[in-house]
Image (tube, rainbow, N blue to C red; front, side):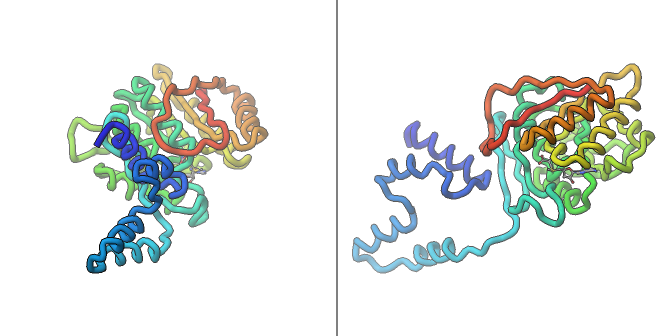
Length: 304
Ligand SMILES: C[S@@+](CC[C@H](N)C(=O)[O-])C[C@H]1O[C@@H](n2cnc3c(N)ncnc32)[C@H](O)[C@@H]1O
């Protein structure tokens, strides 16, 4: 296999494991390499039939299986980390299911994960709280690439929390003390590794006392400012978190958002201004690392 074939294999692997639409895969490049043959099984069948050899049931069965494959409601997506290894997630195929947007990975989560990989020192040896984690892409990438001391995923939707736990286990981590704000969580596979937990945390009902027990150094969130009601409760929790921060500690907050509607995004910035929170736009990372579509601009704000 030469370098071109290797690169093409790599591209197919990345697109395939991220469950990109079949049509978006680099078929043109493959076709050139397979002498203009668009479908491998059909091509093998054609070649086989032309040899007048005995028909091969396996080939027809394989073709029938592909053509008759039933549509499932979930898929497994794998994201290849630049450092090696993968993050694999079981996620819904629909952008809204079970009454929540939290069962799929949104572009801002991937963007934030890419940015984190280029800013490891912000996370290294720190306690990180993620708000509205959804099914866990950003956190799992950070846990596998950025060496945090402790990582707390959180969300408020029961189905999302359950899928999040499933995905954490799928990636080889073990949670021992879900939803305990005070106890130390542990990962049993490797005693030096990150301590992980999943918190049921509703921005509207969590108390300052509960928040002060979390004692995070870094707070992150992706795609959580998509609706005016959500924006109000999300801005309020940022205020509460900053209010209950210990005086001697610094707290770093980063919020990644897809700017689908500039008015909605402006409302978030206005809420921050009203709460007298300062914010600044963070410089984008240099290199795209995962395969995903960016249809609207994505921006990370640092809030302090
Ligand atoms: C658009 S999804 C983003 C999920 C994930 N961060 C991502 O970008 O893929 C918004 C997430 O915020 C969570 N969420 C919305 N309102 C919340 C609240 N009041 N408290 C906690 N989580 C909330 C939802 O359950 C959902 O998982």
